[in-house]
Image 1 (tube, one colour):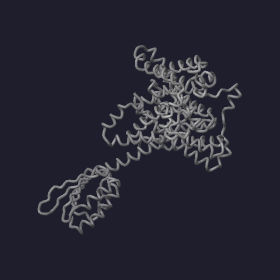
Image 2 (cartoon, one colour):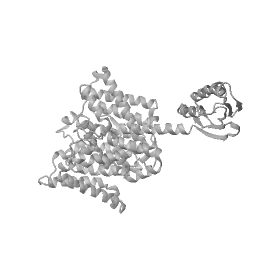
Image 3 (cartoon, one colour):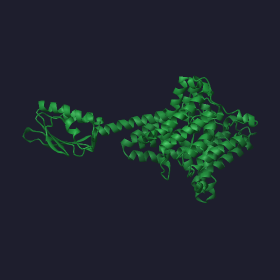
Length: 526
């Protein structure tokens, strides 16, 4: 970990600037205290980062849980009651890890994971465009199509022209220009420009711009368009920002329902992000998923105990980490310490950062996730890859992250069923002389209940007085449902004068009287 510290420190600074507005924005969107988002970001960085097996994944509060949190706080009668559900959710995640439920993440098709990354990239771009121009009606970190303000993603963009803040727009463009020039030209010229990241320079430029123009009528940026970190007056007021669970609510069944919901959704989102992050990782490290669930569960227990929001691994911060050159978990841990130190020592300085500059950083992150070339590449890989991919992308853009993934997964399953239907067997008509149809049906290597429809259709379509060769020599697994179909068909075959030759590893059998008994006697691997 210490060998890569020269790469991890610059990356951690970029992740810090990406995480800061997202932690605050997600807390605001969740109807929770602003400080709760920062707590979750700090715990996600330091605790989960240290316990996780992911080298480049970053954890923190997730936009996908904001709607659940907002509803739960109201239904459970207050934030302290909700914190009990967060703690219990963490305990349930520990159980998921112990029961090795992390394997679930491997069952999502690659096309859906790629669609998730691309959809998130597009959402980042679409959601940050209003902030870039100074239209900050929606909190940072929101990812749902329908926004709290009553607008949707596209109507908010359409209203930009009526809500442009000149100062925010100017420093947004300046910050974006600095980042692009830094990444595409200066970083290739000298090592200094690789260590000193462009986003950090853009943020410093934004603070300087705010200070120099705050008295200017045209370019001044109001506080509502700046980062808004809570500022404690002293140590006592700082400590008062922490909330603690009201464990007397633990007997409320609704608390347990919310806890299980948080555990399930947070675990699913984490596993999806782990899979996506591993795909983005240039070194192709594989994250141990069960260990990740244990780390996330521990993080949520601690976060809930001190007043933080639920935590998941999050793709926006993880991808920013990868794009900035993060090599080990040190970058995630350092970003957590940066959040902690900055809100204690320099909250007033943080509150001078224009949101439009941070939007510029996120626009670059979003573009790198959703490059147009990726659409062409997936399209050329065939419709079985492209359809789940594009459905996932559109689902994320027009609904939200989890719904988009569910839509893509649903389409992917349908495609698998279609291909399974088509590839369950191979049919050859060998001879039609003398009025007798000689047909050879060769079953695939694995035949499951998914293939029932296709095989039943073929058997029922056989003409009377035909001769069927049923070849199962290559079949390693034959579902009992298929065996029952063959057994039932043997009765129909007699009535339609269809003779059957069964060819297996054990030899050739003419018109087997009982398929169920025959296949019970087959070798175990056949």
